[in-house]
Image (cartoon, rainbow, N blue to C red):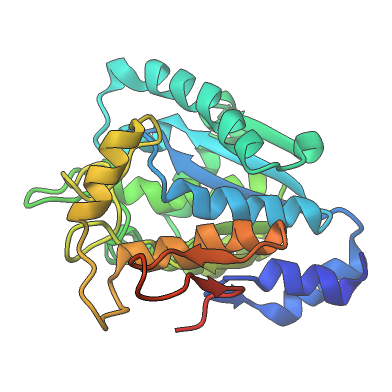
Length: 294
C-alpha cells in the first residue's frame, strides 16, 4: 500500500490529526510505525468501543504495529475500586481480542499491554514525579476535565491521570497516540510537556465520540440507558434502540446516526456492501445507501 492510500485509510472518520504534516513525515521515514490506544478498565465495554476497534483495524491495514493499553492503574485513578481492578483487567483482556476478531482485523501486529506491568517501574515513577514539577494543578485539572470523573470534591488522583497518559507514549515506545475527541486536552498536554523532559512529541489522532442513546452526553457505562452492552442479547438491543433518542431532522447528538456512520457504514464499505433500509410494505421500495451522506 502506497503512502497516499495509507494516509486515506488513516484519515477515514478521524476528527483531528495533530499534526498531519508530522504524520506524513513519519509514514515516509518509518516502515512500521507504532500506535497505541489506552482504555481504562472501568465499566463494562459497550458498542461504542467498535468505533476505535475499527479504527485500530485501519491502522493495522495501513502497516502500523498496534498496542492496546489496558490501563488498570488509570481505572483506579478514575474511581474504580482497587479490589476489582484485576477482575476488570481480565474481563477486558478476554473480550478485546474477540471484538477485534468479530470485525475481521488482522491481529498479527497487535499487542495488549497491562498498564501496571510498566507503570510501577522505578524509571516511570520517577518521570511521573519529574513531570509534576514541570506542570501545574490548573493544567492537570484542565487536561483531565473531560475524561476523569472529578465530582464536587475532586480527588488528587485525577490530576495524576494526564501525567501518566503522557508518559505512556514514551514507555510504550510509540510514534502515535490515538484516542477519542474527549481525550484532546490530555493529548495536547502530552505534546506540551514531553519536550520539557527531553522527550519527543508524538503525533496525536482523534476520532469522534458516539453520543449516548439518551439525550445529551456520550455513550457511557456510568450513564444508565445510554449504552448497549456488548453482552446484551438481541431482545435487549432492540428494546434499547427503540427507546433511543433519535429526533427527526436532528443529526448532532444523535447516537443512532453516529453509530451508523462510524461503525455500520465502515463495515459496509470494507465489505463493498450497501446499507438496505426497509420501508413499509406495499408503499415504497427499499432504500439502498452506499455511503453515509445525509
